[in-house]
Length: 115
Image 1: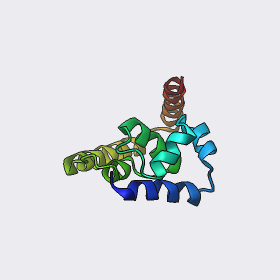
Image 2: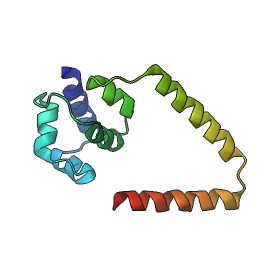
Image 3: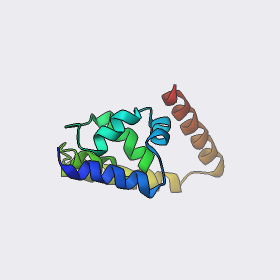
Image 4: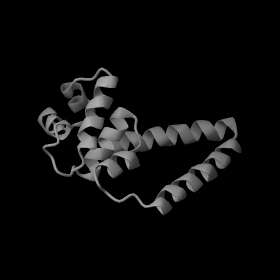
């Protein structure tokens, strides 16, 4: 594994004044595992672990995937940008009532995802 991932994870955690235990509480990833990641003892963390850490540290999932050695196709990045632009233009056309209903629905979906 590229040593940059462990360094990046430690740097992001410290930048946010988080302890390994607090990251464990936020992500469900054990502090022992997090320590091994930061010290480059884990050869390749799973994409799901990287996704949780990307959310916790508010960094790009693709960025962490790339640091961990996973291929991140350029076409995939372009698709994401296109979809975000399309979504942005759709949101611009929403009425206040539609925007409120959409927000409620997204909160509902996230609450289900957490269970």
